[in-house]
Every structure is written in structure tokens, then in C-alpha cells.
Length: 292
Length: 284
Image (cartoon, rainbow over all chains, first blue to last red; front, top):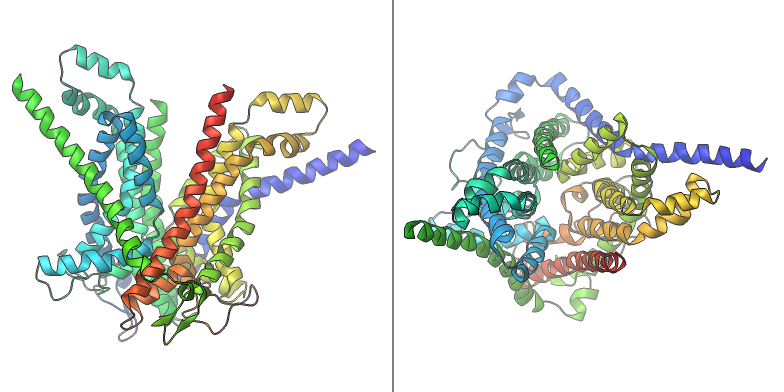
């Protein structure tokens, strides 16, 4: 009798645990369904072609929902951030992974981890207080809230990801590779950049992709420092508006269920797809490190 | 020959320079926050309410709101996250579904926080009719930190040696009894580390709470989980961008309190992790 009850109890527990186990699949699916459902509502009254090719985003005055200004805004900031983060991140990762003495490494790593924990709204605040005025003065602009300010702040926000994963990849390169190279008469630096870095390549690429994902999805910092002007511009010294900032800035003012409301879900879907692809690629490259 | 060593010196210098820029940025931020923020910190600032359109007074309702949200978040995220990790590590084995679960956890942690906010608004606030409330905000944040809790719990479960499981099963315990009485206690420090890091993350997030819980300002404190609440990160955002001419001290003070709160949790998490690592080294 008792063992029957135990069996039943085990069965229930197993089912319950299974349900929790697939929670991530459920959540991801429900999020996607929600975004798609609201986007379909939007596209039923606003042509998808006009959305994808529209050059104006002015939801309240003229009801124009063109994605391009937001997409160029996000792209401009992302490209700028990567240009800044790439040399800094890989440089720091090589220094920490290859050159730094143990004690230095153990001090540097927590400092960089702290950067990862600083809330994005604090980074945005620092941007407004310290970086924006410098940009304004340095380029004698009427206003310092620019794409450049966003790129700089986002670059630093992506650095912890880039540095820690690149460094892991560099550490994963077998020591015998280095020994072989040094034995052939290469200098330490030649060994680093001709042997170690190429061997760690897929990890470094993965770190950049993950950093990219963080940059593209970041909201508060860009909302605070980039000036929020949804116009198509191709200069880092102009104010811009990203997809993320648009959602955060406009969601509060929309009529629930209206066209503007559902348009924000549509750009949310675009954002979801972009970050999904970036993470998917990153995961591919991470898989390759494990195999090494 | 000399040229090659000169080259090495130049590049080493550049690498060091890159590292120094990053370090200077982090230390600079913290230094500025401490120096400028400390001026604002006073008893009235921490325990007082905002006054005169947020230009005077304190930030207590925002601190309290954030504490409520952290508590709510962990109440929802912890059990689900632990059970999810138990399924993945103890039950699932290496099946196709584990691969899909793993992929969706990775993707979930890559979903931008503002998309979680959008979803929280659509699902919890409107569809389930929780309204803009502590409940809706906590649930939204809980979903966001689930990947952290699941991954860290899974790591902790993995580190429990199989001999414990075998010994327990050999004594006639069921699988669940083994997990509940033998495996989980062993994995506890790892689970706590993950939770602490998770709540710290939830405390600092702004985008997911703007539409689901955050109040611009509020008369009195929230009384139930269906009330809106002020929150530190949103309050800082409001002070920095929405209020006209707020005193600088108040902004820096709010930023410092938020940073300290988040750092506090991440430091505790690190301490537990390091102690655990040392203990393991002693054992082996």
C-alpha cells in the first residue's frame, strides 16, 4: 500500500518537475506569441512594406510608423560601440589572460566584474553627467546627447562580456602550443598574436557576438544619452533614437490596444528576432570552444 | 632581432593601455559616485519621502519599493528555477528536449530587458489584469532572472558527487527523497550564490519595471501587491531626465544608493562562491 502511494507521489513529482524543467521553452514561446499576435494586429491596419521601408517615425502627429530611422539609430550606435569595444576588450583580455602576473589578474578580474553589475540607469546617468558635456565641448556641438555618447557608454557596458569570454578562450589554448612556438624562436608577442589568438578565435568571436547582443538590447543608457530624435542620420555627432529606447519612451503614453500601442510590439518583435539571431550565432561559436 | 623585441614592447604597452582604460573607467565611475553621492546621504535622504516635486526630501519609498520587488522576484523565480534545474540535471538525461531547453535558456538570457517589460505589460498587466502592480513587476523581473537561477543551480547540482546519490538510493530512498534530502542540501551554497546575483540584477533593472510597476511618485507607501510602487532605478531615471532642475546632489545620492545596493548583493554572492571553492580545495 505504502509503496503504491510512494509510486504515485513520485509520478506526480516527476510531472511537476518536468513542467518546471520546460519553463524556459514555455516562457520563450509565450513571449514570441505575444509579440507576433500584437504585431499581426498592427500589420492588419498598417502595411508591413510601409513599416519596413518607411523613413519617418512619427506615431502621434502623422501616424507614420517607419522602421528605418530606428534601425539606423540602433545600427549607428552599435557599430560605434563595437569599434570602441573591440580593441579595448580584446586588448584587455590578452593582457589579463597572457601577460598579467597572477596577483594583477586576480585584482583586475573583480574590477571588471563590478562593471557588469552597475545598473544601466546608473551608466546612463554617468553618461549624462560626465561624458555628454565632454562631447559637447570637444566637438562644439549645440547638444552633447548624441549617438557617440551612446556608443561610448554601450562599449563599456559590453566590455565585461567581451573580456571574460575572450579571456576564457585564451586560457583554453593548450600550453604546448605556446611552448612549440617559443621553441621555434618566436618572441612572446609573436606567439600571442600568431598562435594563441588564432587558436582562441572562435571564443573571441563568440564574446563579440554576446557583447553585440548586450549592446543591441540595451535600453536605459541609450534612452538617457542619445537625444531621442527618430531621424535618419549617418553621423555619430547627431542625436538618434534606437528601437529599444522607442519602446521604453513611448509605451507609457500610448492608448492601450491602439495602433501606436501595437506598433511598439512590432518593433519589439524586430528587436527579438535580431537578438535571437545574434545569440544563436554566438552559441555556435561557443560550441566550438568546448570542442577544443 | 632587436626590432622584434621592440615590437613586442610596443604591443605590450598597447595591451596594458587598453586594460588601464577599462579599469580607469570603472574606478572613475565608482569614485565619482562615492564622492558626489556621499554629500547627499543623510538620515532624511534615506528615510524621508520626496518633497517639492522630488527636488527635496528623501528616497525612502523608492528604496522600499525596490526591496519589495526584490523579495517578490525571488519568491517567484527561486522555486521555479530550482525545479527547472533539478529536471535538467537529475531527470532529463541527454535527450533532445534537454538540448531545446538549454537553447531556450541561452536565448531567454539574451532577450533584451525592454522586451520583457513589453511582455510583462501585455501579459501580466493587461491580459491577466494584475494592473500596474508589485505583483506584475515581480513576475516580469522573475522571468528575466530565471536563466541566472537555473544555470547556477544546475552548476551546483552538477558539482554534487554521484556517490552521494548512489549511497542514498542504495539505502532504499526514492529518487525524489535523494534529491530533496541529499543532493539539494549539498548544492545549497551554489543555489544561494545564483539567487543573490539574480536579485542584485533585478534590483538594478529599469526597462522591465517602467510599464509593469514603477510609479513616478506616490502618495504614501504601497499597501498590497496590487499597488504600484516607486523603485530606485526608475526614480534615478526620472530625476535625471524628467524632473526640471533637480538638485545634483539628489541625483548622485540616488545613484550611489542604487549602486551600493546592487554591489552589496554581488559581493555577498562572490564571497559565498569563493568560500565554497576554498572548501572544495581543502576536501580534495
